[in-house]
Image (cartoon, rainbow, N blue to C red; front, side):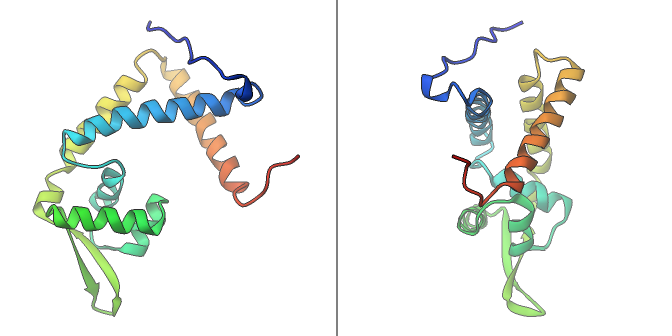
Length: 159
């Protein structure tokens, strides 16, 4: 087993131990994923857009925006970069020229297997010291926490 000693908890976060742990985990996970994505010449978040297109090519920009849960400017910037890199095309929809349809190019489609492998490797690294039951419990808890946060978005914290 590897060292499971958490980063020193600042006094200010003593009443938010779980939130601090989630922040530290997300930061470490994102950093490791970013390094793996750089090896594929991708920026973090671009793989999420590609994964959606692998499942259903030819989506509108609005559909992608909804499916990945990122803000409009982030998705637009990512799609522009990916188009410039030759991974996808964006063309007006035949039914409404204001709607942009996003489609994979051959180069974009060629990233499906490398991204699948990268995601599998990241998972293996992440759960290396966990049992299958712990992975299932963590996934269940993380989903519940995410739902709670989504359900409470826009609300101010209680005083």
